[in-house]
Image (cartoon, rainbow, N blue to C red; front, side, top):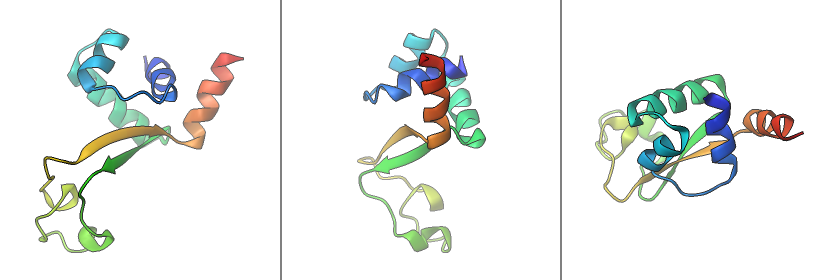
Length: 95
């Protein structure tokens, strides 16, 4: 399942969690868990597109402007991107 998700992310398509869950054949909750696991393992990284706080936000948890401090603007989108390690897994699978 994890390798399937990496292969889908390698296509660099913009998919919602629901679309990804349908393609993989599991629930959205399961996909969220798999994405968190892949991130923790260093195969993918989360990228935010849109309005976010400054880099100092993590230092000032009370700024109330982004995910780091508990507020995420509606016009911010999360994308999952393969890391070098994730790319290696996908490329070794293709060979």
